[in-house]
Image 1 (cartoon, helix red, strand yellow):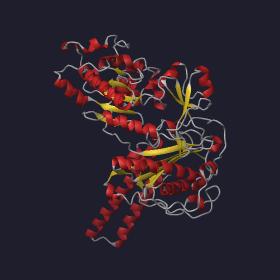
Image 2 (cartoon, helix red, strand yellow):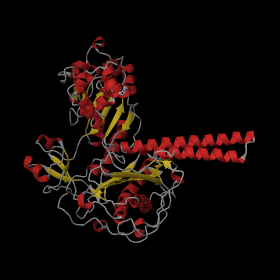
Image 3 (cartoon, one colour):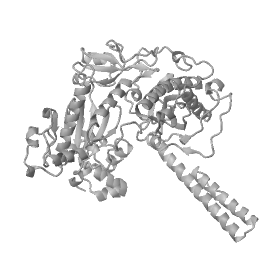
Image 4 (cartoon, helix red, strand yellow):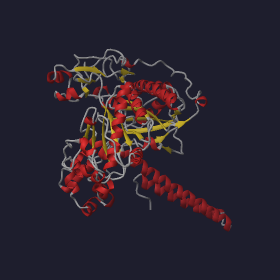
Length: 604
C-alpha cells in the first residue's frame, strides 16, 4: 500500500459556519427543560443575555475570547463581557431545530445543482461531495490544467512540511511537468468547491468551510483546519504531514475501546507511530482483517464511498430526562411520546410534501437506568406505521414501551426517549391521502406536559446538563457509540404488530406494570428491523440481532431438511410411524439449537 492509492479521487467535506450575529461573540444557550416549556419560535426575541444556562454552541468570535461549549452563562460572560446569548428555539417541550434543518436542505440543493457532483448528506449541517467526475470533466475541457479557485485567498494548501503553502496561486500556476500524481484532480476539485461555497453565500447568505482531499477520512480531518468561510486542500503528498502528529483517537474507529487497546498493545500515542508499525506485526497482534485496516487507516487510505443521498434515511426526535426527572410512569411516558409524535408528524408531513415519500416503520428507543447513553438497560422496538398522526404513533409507541416495562421485575426509569420513522417508500400523492388522514385522539384526556406525572412543572432555574442529543441531532435515531451498552441487558429489536388497545396509560397500574388489559402477543413470525434503522442502532444491539438472525437461518435450514426427508419418506413408502420419529428427531435438533442460542447446555 502506498500513496498511489490516494490518487484518482477528490472528495470534499463541507460544513456550514455559524451565522447569526457573526461579527459579535455569540453563544447558544440551552433552554430550561424543567420550566414552563413554552414554545419559543425562531422569529421571536431569543436574546437571553442574563441566562446562566449551559452553552451548547459558540461562534468563532466567542472562542477567540476563551468561551467554550458547556460553560455556564456567568462563567462565559466573565471571560467575554460582550458575549451575547441566544436561546435555542423550543417547541413540543424540547429544542426546535427546524431553522437549522431548513438551512441545511437549502445548502444541499445548491451544492448539487447543475453539475456532476455526488452529494451525501452527513448531518443537519454537513455533507460529503464526490467531485471526481466533475473535476475530470473540467480538466478535459481545459487541457489538463486546473483553474485558479475564486477567492483564492480563502484557499489554504497543506504542504509536505505540515504548514500552509505561502503562495497558493503559484502552486496552481505551475507547468504541466511540475504537477505530482493526482494533484491536478485535487486542484480542480478545490476550484469547484470554491465556486459552490461562493454560490451558497451569494444565494443564501450562509458561509461554509470545507476540506478537499483524496478520501472521506482526510477531507473530514482537514475541513476544520481553517474556519470560517475558508477551505483546506490536502494533496496525496501532504497526507503524512497531516496525519503523523494526530493523536490516535482522532481517527474514525479509534476513539473508543479498540483505539485504547491499540495504543496499549503497541505502546504508541500518535498516527505517525502507528504508520511506522509493519503490517505483519499489526496482523499478528489484531488479526489479518483489523491489522490491514489499521495499516491503511494510518496512511489515510479509506475505501468508504460517497453515496448519493440528499435525504435522511430516517426522521427522529428525542429527549433526555436527567436525574430525578427520569420518567417512572407509563402515563408520563405516553405524554412525552405525544409531544415527540407531534413533532414527528409535522416533519413527516413536510417530508411527504417535499419528497413524495412516506415511512413504513415506527421505532421507539429507550435508555433506562442511568443518565448517559451507553450504560444501563436499553431497547429499541419497531412496528408498522398504521397512520402518520401523532395520537396513533404515540399510542403504538407507548404499547411497545409498556411491553418492555412489564418485563422489568425490579422497576424502571427512563432517561432517554426517542421516536423515529424510517423505511421510506416513494408514492404518488393521490395514493396516500388516506395514509395521512387525521385519526381520532386518544381516549381520556392527557395531562398537559408541564403537569405530566413524573415530570414536575417547576425545577432548577437552569438546566443541570445540556441535552446534546436534541441540539446536535444528526438525523439518526441513535448514534452508535463504541462500548455502548456493554454489560447491559438488551432486548432483541423486533418488528411488532402495533397495539390496537386503548392508550397504555389508561389501563396500566400506577407504576405501569400492574393491572389493565394484557398486551397482545408478539407474532410468531418475527421480522427484524429494516436495514436503515439497524445501521443506526448501538453496536451491541446489532451484534445481538446478527446472532438472532443466524439462529433463525439455522432453524430454517433444519425445517427445510425435515421437509425434504418427509418427501423422500413418502416416495419410498415409509411408514407413518417412521415419519413421526423423524419429525421428533428434527424437533429435538431445533430445540438443541434454541438452547445453544439462549446459552443453555443441551440435554443428553
